[in-house]
Amino acid sequence: MPADPIQPTRKSRGRPAIGKGAPVQVRLRPEMEQAVDAAIAASEEPKPTRPELIRRALAEWLRAQGFLTGEGGR
Image (cartoon, rainbow, N blue to C red; front, side, top):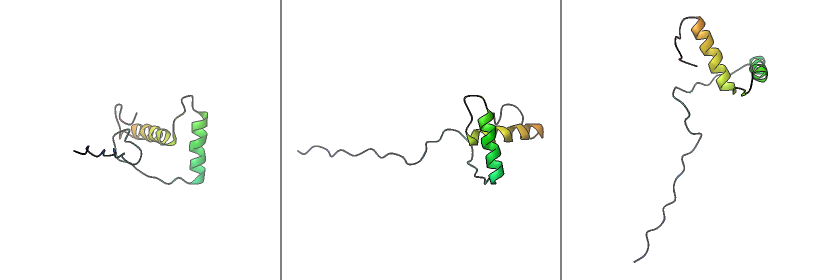
């Protein structure tokens, strides 16, 4: 009796999900992109990624406007 054929494990494609929430894509003008990169360079270690810096800035603005309360958007 022949042995069962070995089925290769299929790997999922793309980057694994690391958090909850809807992905949002935005376009930044060159001067905004440069400002984001300058803010990252001026940050303490560990330096935030572009998405993390943008999330932090948005959360800070939303809190200041009263739209976000508590730890949401850390």
